[in-house]
Length: 127
Image 1 (tube, rainbow, N blue to C red):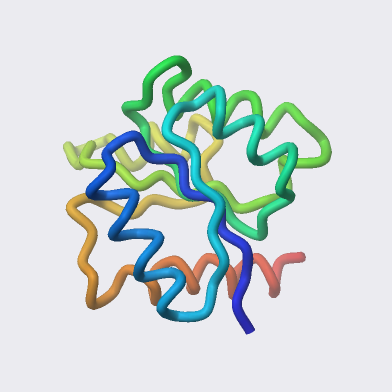
Image 2: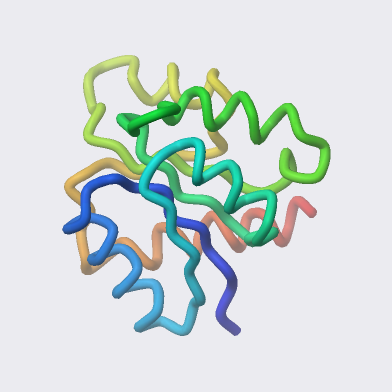
């Protein structure tokens, strides 16, 4: 059964690839191209999972995480960083800032949907 996934990504190529892959595997997607619109979309769409870039215009991914985790109606939605920040310590910084997981860019089309679905399964077991 497909789930509803919000993708917050300002790079059109990355956004198209992620939404294409998710839809091909039966998920529905909502998209936003900056952090402010991403927070608004999360409030309006009540997604099952949120994928969020860190380097976003208007409000970066860390700001998105702060806002989503501060809202009681949104804090339980898994928030996954999808980012090129892959230096030693970046993953720990991302998790410490409120993200529930981390997928590095460039995404691997062969494993991306399985990686996302692993977070959905974890959410089902935890919830």
